[in-house]
Image (cartoon, rainbow, N blue to C red; front, side, top):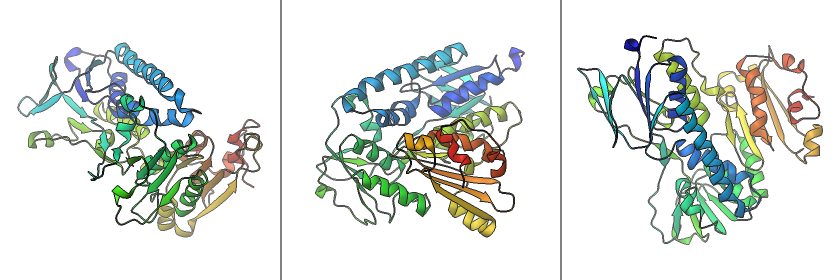
Length: 408
């Protein structure tokens, strides 16, 4: 490619959306200038305060090993990213950056302590932060960013936690802490926890949480925070996207030379969706063909004990849009040999099919390793395969994957 025709990019934010965009752009143009700015650490909140620390918490048997393992894995994963940046000639600047747009030059200026660059495109992937209630209480109040900071973790875990909020962050961390023998309670103002799920899935998850000894109180219009008995109040009422603070000139090129990605795109705050956004954006900039991702086909996973996983339209959406045109197959994992060997035979399996063609529309799993198992059914759903086609495939025995072909 001729250097004079090469594009230049500044990406602010090196979380999943930002770093994946840099890598996708490099695949399509080996000569472009790519600058990736990050004021904290490469990997963003996902690596340092969210996805990775929480899943590490799920995998341990004793809290004494947690921080050591977490530091090791975060270091290795961060080094892996930095190595990729170097190999792909992506300029990683570990500094906070400010930006502005010059309408006459049709260029962005991005400044940090050590850099002052002009570029053709600006991509903002600034992430999000935990929502805060600003509650008045003498109790210690934390959120996920505080909880997963190395400084806080170095002090060790407490004996009891009260979660404010009943979303996926709350139920995941509540379940993980309960596994470590902690006293845990969830308070939710809505009448149900996990209100984005259908009743059957929610009831099964809630039942499992209660079996872990987690107390759940819903429909709370007001909460007296000073009367909470647990040692720690854990705010888990969701996250809010960072603000871009764009002037009018920048807004005029939004979607043309300026793009918002990841949590700032306000679709679903999921790392795997951010990867898809990055692939699509790179293809769009370089006029490559691409298929727009379908939000209904973005997998949802919750790392409770046992795990929850779903892909495809929700049961509520199908009931509204397709009414009597679908059928449901439900079963336990009891007939699966590997599930019995693993003492995992109480798992739940639900497949939703289009009645006439038996095309697989959606799948829900609740059980150990459900978050891994869901990947087996994602390709058939995306490819529009029928259950009959799936049943002709050969799965290894004995494995949990056979759940998908044990439908009777």
